[in-house]
Amino acid sequence: MLDISISKKEFGNKIILENINIEIHENGIYGIVGKNGEGKTTLFKCMLSLTPFEGKISFENEVLKSRKVAWCPTEPALYEELTAAEFYDFYRELTSSTSNNSKMLFDVTENQLIKNFSTGMKKKTYLNAVFQNDYPIYVLDEPFNGLDLEANYILVQYLKEKSKSSIILISSHILEILYANCESIFVIKDKKIENYQKQNYQKIQGKLFDTL
Image (cartoon, rainbow, N blue to C red; front, side, top):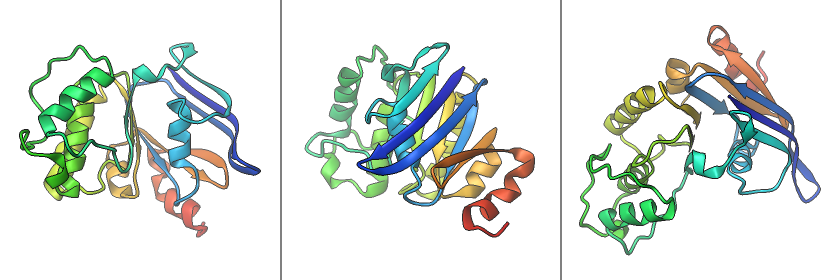
């Protein structure tokens, strides 16, 4: 269903990713882990056509189009002079969404300027905007950062429901959440990627920190 093939991604003369192959055939939640600087965000940007690379990424036997992918970066960019409600409208226009979903995942004061929000409220606002529409693929880069315990629980439960009809890729340093909810986890290290199934999750930390 989703086929990611990156033969090479480099910045200048530095190779970031090389011979990356990911095949995902079923809907579900899938983890992407690696230490800082290993290329997790770069991989996501390749999927979204935000950076050039050598290779091909396809979905349902066609070149993956960015409009099929919901994207939440680690630090979402919001227009802070807008209210939350105005940002939701702006995001719908930006993504040409026809959704009129008035029920938001998180409770956010919609008539308050975003610049007055805490880091967690800003993240909730952005996620609310993203989840206004349904996508076949969701790419979430450190989505739990900045959220409190209850918000993380709400987000995980929501993603579990969405994963019945969508592919969800999550990058996170909170391995326990990935272990509990992912169908499989891809580990990026030294420009390469390795897929771990549930029965081998206990080997991931050894792989990451060279303790195997």
